[in-house]
Length: 468
Image 1 (tube, rainbow, N blue to C red):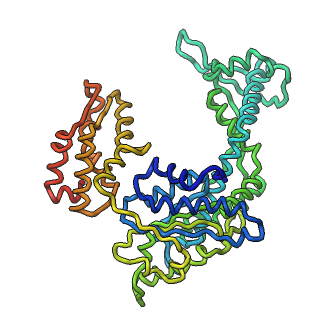
Image 2: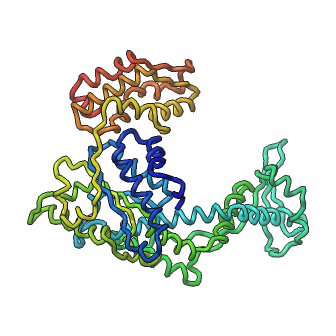
Image 3: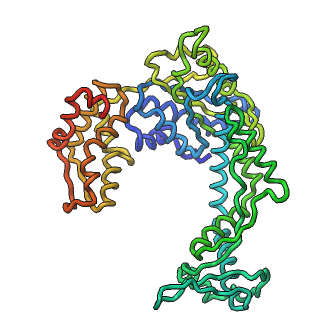
């Protein structure tokens, strides 16, 4: 893990760049993340006994619960999955089983480790791909390849199609020709067409039609079984590509040859076990008063199915057995109707840290619109710049947008910062539609403009309910 130099205060500072407010929640996740690094420094006999202190976040929608967890995972460079508790059902009902959470986490870890290893071998892969391209191009001089004109327009030269005639071995001296290598690197041969052999990916899903719970692992095993049979692995096929396209294909193929698939699996399983983060959203949707019939039976069943995974158990995946003892679980829910105490006591006990997130105020909306790196005002300015238009919202305009967002949340459902998306879309709808045709290159939106466009929508209760 790359957290040795990150103190909890610095972790909170990094989160502040993307999430406004919610200091208590940021402190809680920062401590949890730092404790992971601390555990790795503890002597081995005690290390396995230290389990993560799972967190449950309570707060209305749109206040930053999901964003805090997602940014935390990126900061920790840890495998991360976000699941919705309402998508799962008790074993025996139709729906996903909770074991698929762990399988998804391991898949995320595999993709992360593979990407890291591919990046490590990228330089060698580029060299190998260049060598294959030079061999293919230089072999033409030996007569092993033929050049077929692609009927260019009159007065233009090339491109040409270079095709193989089956000569596998060529003179080694030719493809080391420095002039040809220099031309290839300068991009002068990018438009030349070459015919190369590439590994065709194995076939698509085999048992996806079965659906239901547990079939993700079955499908993976069947793919592996058929992939190992003679003639069932990825076939070699010929493709006619430009040198520029062929270079990318060959680089990917050479990189795949250089990585160790077994090592990727081992590292991915270890990373998922030691640093994985699972964010369970809408946990309040499976809480509620006990009932002998109806959907509540499945709700409590989901909680009981979640319990062993959160407590620490071993789940079988296509990459091997995965222990969840040291996976950090962060649950979140609005808990408008139910309360945290409505969860079964055993599950409550596995989330010892409870954090209340604050509802967003008008001042928070102003900060959200202006301070984060991915602030909405910056996003829309960047979008309009692609049309050659310089968009600017004055401070007064931002203040009015925040005021109207707060008012819309008060009158209708409180959806937090997500209200800003609908407000900004309504505000900039006309500009977004007419941007390609506008003659003016600079557009400044001030407070009167905001009120003129948005206040009629807010005044109409029915429109405000469905539009804002």
